[in-house]
Image (cartoon, rainbow, N blue to C red; front, side):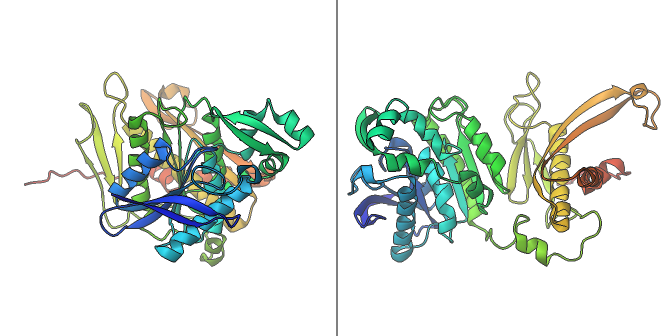
Length: 425
C-alpha cells in the first residue's frame, strides 16, 4: 500500500486535508471514508479499514471535515449539512484527479453523512455504515448538558472526547432538520449495515431502523464484542475484511441496470399475470454443497457467485450458519416477499414494506384438520406476513392470497421428483 497526503477545497472554500491510500497496482475502484463526529481521518478504525481495502485493490480517500484534524476552517461554523457538502467536494476531487468513488463508507455520524451524500454522487454503487445512528438527532444527547446554554446564548464551549469544541445554535437547528428516513428509503444503492450489539454510544437498534428503512439489496453484519470506535485491531480487521468482500461483489456489476425497486422497472415490465412469477429460473449454474464448512457438519453452499455456510445448531454442530430447514424457510420467505412486492408495484398499491416470519415444526397429523394425512406426523410451516402501508382491507386480503402463489410455495405443495445419482471420478 502507498499512502499520499492530499488537499482539496471544501464546502467553505477552505483546504481540506486528506490521505489517499492506494494498492500497489492499479486500483480496481475508489472509496470515500467519512469519520465519526469530532474524530479525524487518522482514527484507528479509518486507517485499518483503509489498509484492508487496499489489500483488495480498492483505493480509499479519508479526509478531515472542515475545522477538524489538519483541515482548515472553523468547526463552530460547520454542521451536518456542511459535512455532506464536504463529502461531495471529496468525491469531486477524486473524479477530477483519479476516478469517482463507487463506494461510500461512514463511521458513526459519518455513516449518516454518507447515507445523505450518496444521492449527490451519481457514480456511487454501494454504501456501508459502521455504528451509524438512524437519525442525526441522536448526536444531541452528547450536548444535553450544554444545550440550554447554546439555545439561550447562541453558542457554548463543550467537551467532547475530552476536547473542547465550540457549538453554535445553527448546528442544533441543522441536525434537527434532516430527513434521514426518506434518504435511506430512496438510497437506490447496495447497503451494508455493520453494528456492534454492545455499542453503548450508538445503540444497535439504530442499525435495525436503518435496515428496515432501506430497500434491497441490503445486508447486516453484527460486530460482536466491538466497541463503538472499533478500538481493538481485530474488530477493525474483521469489519474491514467483511466490507472488502461485500464491496467486491457489488462493485463488479452495474447496480443501476435493473433492480426491482426502481419505478422504471414497473413501468417497463410486460403485462403481468394476476400472480407474478418470481425466481422460476435457476440461472446458468447449479447449487453446490460440500463439506468445507467449520465443524463436523459445516457445509459450504455455493450458489453462482454467492457463498454461505450451513450447519447444525449446538450441541450437534457449531451453529456456524443456518440449518438446512432454516434455508428452506429463507427461500420461502424471500420468494413470498418478492412476489408481494412485484404484485403490489404492478397494481400501484401503497405497500411500503413487507416482512415474513416463518417457523418449521413437526406435528401430529390428528392436529391438522385440513390435511390429507390422517396418521403419524407431518411438517408444518407457520408463515406470518406483515404488510406496512396505507392498504385497505380488500388489498391486504388479496396480497395474503398472492402469498400462497409464490413459486417456492407451489413447489413445496407440488409433487417433486428428486433424482439422485452417484458422481464417478
